[in-house]
Amino acid sequence: MALYDYNFCRGLVNGKGWERGIVQQLQEAQRVIKKNFADMDLENASVGEEMETVVNEMVSELDRLIADVQSVHFR
Image (tube, rainbow, N blue to C red; front, side, top):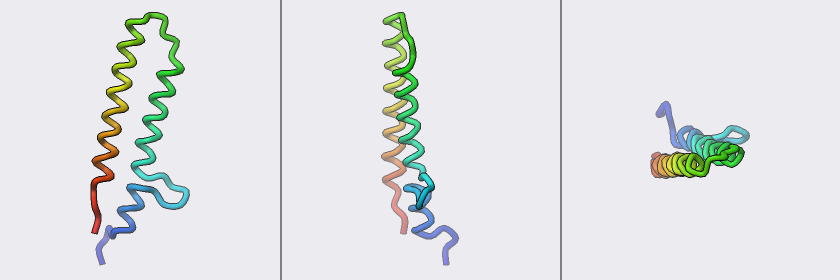
């Protein structure tokens, strides 16, 4: 019997029961990043645009990471 079987690995990726998996943690990070940006009080428009660019890049990078994690197949 393998130490890390299919069910164990899928549980890490997707979570089991009340536990969050890797994908849910990354999605939560995206949500928090977007919320923190929305909560910022940016008076300077150019700073706001720069921050929006950075935030969008972070969210896109997390999207790619989530896709990579979800593309891993277990036997």
